[in-house]
Amino acid sequence: MKIAIVCYPTFGGSGVVATMLGTALAKRDHEVHFITYHQPVRLDLLARNIYFHEVSVEEYPLFHYQPYDLALSSKLVNVVQEYGIELLHVHYAIPHAYAGYMAQQMLKEQGIELPMVTTLHGTDITLVGNHPVYKPSVTFSINNSNIVTSVSDSLKQDTLELFDIRTSIEVVPNFIDMSRYSEEFKDCDRSMMAFPQERIITHLSNMRPVKRIQDVVSIFEKISKEIPSILIMVGDGPERAAAEEYAKKLGLQLKIKWVGNSTEIDRILCFTDLFLLPSEKESFGLAALEAMANKTPVISSNTGGLPEVNENGVTGYTSDVGNVEEMALNAIKILKDDDTLSIFKTSAYNKAQEFDIHKIVPQYEELYHKAIYSKHNND
Ligand code: GMT
Image (cartoon, rainbow, N blue to C red; front, side, top):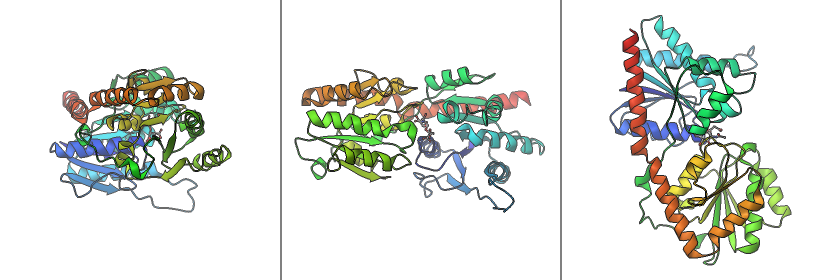
């Protein structure tokens, strides 16, 4: 099948999911065309069956905001015509589903029927999409997608509650390639990061307000009073400077390593003992799944789809947003002795198997066939 994928190419989870999906589809002999303003951060352009088409926006002084959605829909029309694309899969509704709909209408005038699958990722529904500035357009483009998926059941419920949805929503969870995390994977040279008696705690995110990274620092401060430990903060974003300041105020600067955006996430998670994700909102929490695949238990909030990933009392613990006291107490419960930690590590790894890429990608393929088949049926 010839598939076009639209996504954000940045470090966010939706771009990572789209890139992993496209790469897996290419390995399954589909022809995959990525269409976005920059090469996705984890995309291997040298891989077989993978193509990238850059969307460039022609700047014009009259424009206060550059019309990226117009440029995207035009690029989609060109690529569909040039390569005979059979299906469009857009990740993150804003503005991708809207631009995809416009491309469909332009192609229809030329007798080309292009089915579109829209995957909802989180803040396109719970935060940005729900804002009155965007809501009418987001509602329209969801209702006019041939197939709609969400990355968790929680996000499906949020979508049905917040929007006037007149189409079905299929839940297809995010995924991970478990073959990259075989059990005997032992290349975890933790001695380079911490003393033998210290526990290694990690947080990874784009450090926007929704991630509550000052809670991460507060939780760590309480843990470190009871258990010798260090904290590795991975990622960068608008809240990082204030959180670093807060950590200094607590006298933690020697115990916290701020490593910025890293391409060595698996190596860091490999020697991590506990992962912290106290988000305000989290439709799925891909970072938590990546930690669990690396045999790392998770302390997280119970918001959104997180409880569908981080099983309370089994792969870690979940608490109400902002309850840093309880999160710290639960973290200490896990870290206090090696046997308890080992049980949680194994449970986290086993739970991650449920989200293996080989179980999830066929669900997308089935929906692609359904979208194309229903298109033929309407012909
Ligand atoms: O920044 C966002 O909120 C969008 C997106 C991203 O690109 O990081 O995050 C959302 O999509 C991820 C991939 O499906 C999910 O794992 C995240 O939970 C979700 N973020 C939120 O819901 C806050």
